[in-house]
View (tube, one colour):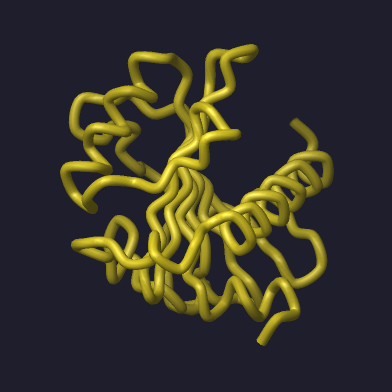
Length: 166
């Protein structure tokens, strides 16, 4: 996939997912257990220049996307297709984990529920689960048409800046 087309696709994914999280989670659903302080050892807000082994994929404005060399493509028993790390103004604010089966979706839902508690699931959005904490939002989605999906992690302070809602 060409870098700019990939960036635009990721940018759209980010914007829609972030807006979905912002506007569809009631206040009562906020807060979950075991809120992650990092993703795979990378602290939220870390500067890209401080990290080793990051391979540039694409950029769109202040958003830059990377993959990490030798990143294990496994989460417990789930085979992962790709992990993309997103930076806003060179600070780590999102991770997108891609997978490719209904079984992986169900396993990831179990893993996330075990680690973070029961998710919020809007009735009108099947195959979408949200965990919203003080600093981190997690979105798990599955697309039945493509038989694939992703888990997206968002660091809220930088997400708000990226959306212009600071």
